[in-house]
Length: 432
Image 1 (cartoon, rainbow, N blue to C red):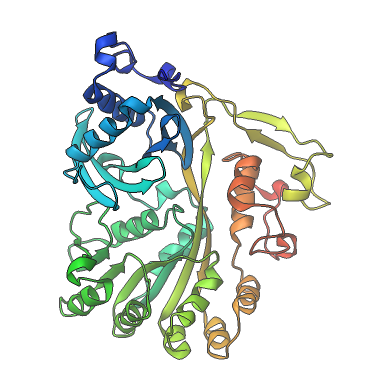
Image 2: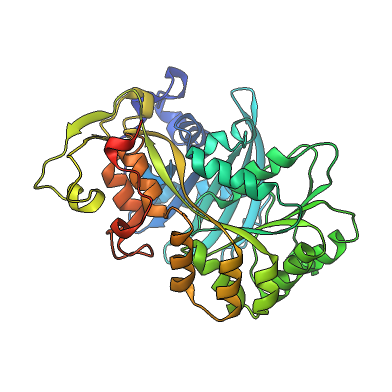
């Protein structure tokens, strides 16, 4: 099988296009280099090398969505995988067990860190390469694309002298980026910031970062015990996975430290219940929690080619985004141009629900109230839901209705229920 057409080739600089001589086409070294160059040119965050019955499919993730980059013949599949494993100092003789590796390289005069993960599959080893661009990792709250209201709510939480602040959401929802942004905003010479991560994705100047190593017993909980003897002011725990880590994080929060961490839950209110599921005492959890941030990432429409259209009253958009009394707005959809590599999107922005854990919330948690009761209290106190925040970004033309549908799912079936019943929605005619 020959290489398939690269859909991004038009966006590649001339020197990176597939113009090598036929004899060079067979060089696995050239092929590996070209795959990396093409992925980096289109700002891919991950590269997937997936073996199949007809060859190796190479896909790259751009702004959270996978796109096919090329197809590699079966004859070159094993050699290409081995080439990457050699560069990452992985064991090329071991194909039955998962492995991890790392490559440090440079691209356009800037350092690039590649994290490799191999996994045995039916047709051979699958390899996923995470691309970490240090120069693009400028973490600030402004770059998250937050509404002013959410940005101010986050800043208020960050000004707490102590307590536990959680960021929740599924894998790939930008939780780590939000944590890094908050740490960067709090980082100054008068404070001792320490993180515990698995793994350390980006280096933050002035922050002591510790990587857990489970193989030698260096777990989140064990690191936290030692960190408390390191005179910390602010502690960031990469993820709360078990009861021991949860209890240590809460202990740190109750003894005068500001603690940030992440949880895998779908809603902000669900994070409190998750702590109880892990075995944490409700009174301790209620005392420690200061706020919870639920988050998703949506792709930002390319400003060069986004296309305006008048909403059709018979289409699906009115029932999904609008109230019956709302006028039909002008929305925007993706089109595609060279600036966005013909995807219609360029970059991503956060859709957030910032949930301050107030006295009423603490009372509900101690009394055994569930997630729905906490959500009701939050709405009564002015918390904007994930969907309401995303809806506003659609109406402002920052993202498309179909992108919001892709990320959030059908309205009314998710965690927010009937969003139209919320008390503080911003309507199209009230927006600037």
